[in-house]
Length: 182
Image (cartoon, rainbow, N blue to C red; front, side, top):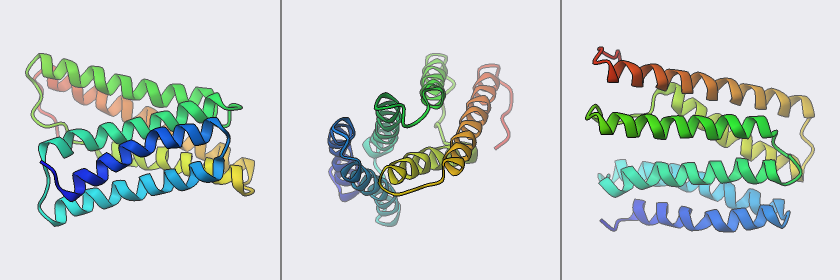
């Protein structure tokens, strides 16, 4: 269904190649603005979908895919270009997402999927991943203390690993037919 929230999500998807190109050509100021616009559009489309009662199946599917494409391309590009973000952190972020995709696929194959909802820990992880990319981009335009960045990278890594473990435990319980506390 074509509605304003889905149009905003599609617009965000089209920003991803521009974001990647900006980083590749080291136009970090432009990349920062594109990333900020994409992050704000993510909040706006979700708000509008709920507020206008325009939540659609395509929006529920497309929104998290676009978010993952944006965040993963940001981590990959910022690790690839001069190792701005540590490679080990990018590997953690990508590994968590692969684990979640494989887990979701397994739950689907075994008919255990009801509705995949992000956990609070998963939402906090997404926040820290977006915040990490944003602050890293800011640090390329303005001075940000290296100690702050290192602490942010470690915090993001901790949330990423913790949410991966949480989703894994939840998935194993679901596959084992155990009750899962909400």
